[in-house]
Image (cartoon, rainbow, N blue to C red; front, side):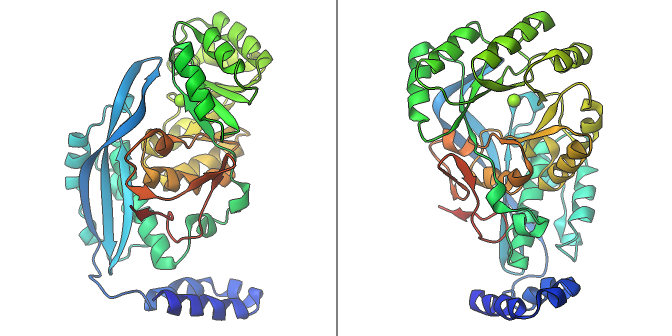
Length: 378
Ligand code: MG
């Protein structure tokens, strides 16, 4: 199949570019004719999996050593797409709730796997929340459709894979010894993300600065309570080479956040306060930019719309992640050419990744040309 498909694209490439562009339907539908023969019915399967973290991870609100995920597969005509739901504790999902949600989905009723808009709108309407569960199907369907087309998603969307940003590597709240050790381990990364909102914020930054002068992004995870303290910190952090401040105050404090955004010398980015497409317009004026994560916005399709909306409002875009395997991280990476900053290190913080996908090369998110989201099982 691969050889036949390659021949098809070589032939298509030999045709003048203009005529190829004039016939997009032919170009996209032809590879389907060579697809392997299997059941022409969409089927969804899933299983729970527990990610083991390399270090105990502490943010302003909690500590943990494992992360529960659910791995999904969608099959059509002998081709399998992979997906994943990672459960951020603050969204209130669990392996049980994700699997209960997935049980309610009947993909068998759709004849055309390319109808992502129809299928994903229907799935979104099943319940109000369950965003990680929805993302697990969205990602698997995107992987499947990309494979059926024989194209990676950055190509389907028309993004330049060379425009991917450098990714930050996250350092959680910890003792100076551990922070120094983690900073040294992060030598290959050109950008660090530091979790603040603990008792020793300045000590965290000073400790890292004793080891490296790399640029830093900071994330308070709603941990500060006073807007004047937040503003003083923003000025202090800028002096220390910090380029942005994520969710410094609780998401409900929109007036204080808007005040801070107006006064701050570095961009204030909304994460917990901006989950879905509908939140982006509301975020205008409250934050300078938004942190988009597949697990909170229901997946690749909505994330892409959020980027377009944020850009139309003149806002910055960061692509972030939860602790995820290379499945979720690779899916998000296909959007990263459109982001100002990427925080896509979730797969690098675990010791039992079950997929191989996107790589960090010289600190930069580096996408492969493999179709779909570009991953394989390991
Ligand atoms: Mg955050």
